[in-house]
Amino acid sequence: MATIAAAVASACLLILLFSKDFVGSLYLFFIAPLTNFYYLGNLVATMVPLIVAGLGVAFAFESRNFNLGGEGQIYAGALAATLVALLLPESPALGVQLLSCAAAAVAGGLIGAFSGMLKRRLGVDELISSFLASSLIVLFVDYLVTGPFQDPSSNFQTTRAIAPAAAFARIFLPSSLSSGIFVALLLSLAGKAVMDRTRFGFELKLCGANREFAQYAGIDSGSYTLVPMALSGALHGLAGSLMIFGSYYKVMRGFSSGIGWSAIAVSLIAKNNPLALIPAAAFYAYLDSGAKSVMMGSDLSSEIVAIVQAVIFLFITASRLPFARVFASRKGGSE
Amino acid sequence: MNWLGAAGMLSGNAIAAMTPLVFAAMGGLFTELAGMLNIALEGLILVGAFFAIVAASVTHSLLAGFIAGSLAAMTLAWVYGAATIRLKANIFVTGLAANIFASGLTVVLSNQWFGTKGVIALKAPELTRPFAGALGGIPFLGQVLFSHDIIAYLSWLCVLATWILIHNTSAGIRMRATGANPEAVAASGFKPDAYRLLAIVLSGLFCGMAGASLSLPLAAYVPNMSAGRGWIALVAIYLGARKPGRIALACFVFALAESYSNYAQGLLRIPSEFMLAIPYAATLIALVAGSMAERARRGNR
Image (tube, rainbow over the protein chains, first blue to last red):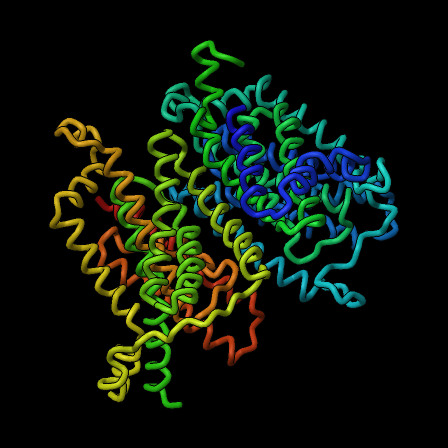
């Protein structure tokens, strides 16, 4: 709560500092996003990748592996999904969606597994290797999107769009909200069940809390580096494919544009709890839509939301560590 | 062009490109020695670059720009360090915060002050090249060693200063002790946290200089002009076995790769994305190779 208060306070302060029309910008930031269904629908649509990628972050962080490669994994997943969908133009929508999402999960998962494997075999810090691998992937996908897979009929730096029939149903026109939100909500429920009700989830959290203890308990802690990193990458890739089928229909250059970082913020706010990802993503999407509305309606640039995000990151672990949930529950604290 | 001329041009460019890396790596060395992984180098460089060029153009003084860039990065480093150490926050998350803050703040301010989110070209005086006149005419060596601006020579001095600071001053020795054995430092009556914070603020100072050495010679600020240098600096520290001289050498190798890629791009017409990828690829390969060598060395014992 303290972090959310700090985030709201810093947003107010930034508007006070940089806007000539304080009250007007304040209204645009905090109230306008809630005043009509178009904005509200877009706000909920923004939650979709944040929840799914946030779940990916949660699985990595909860096992104490830092996946900093979300940006590249989302971008690669989006491209993989788009390419599969473009290859199967006349197939039934459900088949295309399943195959594309699977391809996206594999693409993201392989990138995550790469860092997990390096950590397990060579002890290479996964935090640095995932960031570097992701930076490479982003540049490579940039090249593919503007080179070999560029839509020849478009002046924009984008791939061709998938067949409209293959996309998810829009459920809240004219906003970009699609049935993808249900996939995200279901995944968050499933993530909660896996984390709290399965042996995998238990051992994963144990490895996160105390790797040496887990080793003594007979758990192969090395595979709890590889598997969570791969799962984390796969969920990021999936988030990318949901964006394609839900709202965007094609990959443009710079597609992921910070969603990977935002997902880390969301997961930290939710303290890696899969169910808490939903309100955390809603809060984050609210800040994001506020920033967009301020950018369109006033003299401020939307990057103020990056500063608010930074404030969240600065304080979120100060009051409580990202892994504190495990420690707290052990002491019989809040669960 | 004959091969000597080409080699002279490549290594001369590499030595120029090495300057920001050297500053940043020396800054990161302090935090590394104090036992912390400082991923905020990238953001600190960016803030330094932005404020250096803004201050230089307002005051028409390069020195003022250089100092302003350093102070701005130190301030951000202090906030980042205080949150990490005083509030006991996770250093990786606060480092991320510093990086995101830096890229957000520079865009917001650039939009606010200059009405653009793109490149800001400002009028700043030209940097002096102290040895170019007298010694620049020497074949090969003139180009490689004596053609550089004053900030480049300052970065060489920085390597020396860092070496003296960590080996011959009590603060430097206690800082290293904090990384090696914080309990022992505390038992001797010193505060490990104070030396951790000092290391972070020093890394801010040096990264600010790194940023100034990017924007001042160009007389412009380009969004995200740090372009991964903070990360490369981290790997240079690692490859240089945390010794200032060897780190500078590692920086030179990375800079040579950069200057070669710029040269090759002109010749081979390779897509720019591949050129931009070279620092990240080189860093990743160096990281993996370094870990493999480490494993082999341990295995032989």
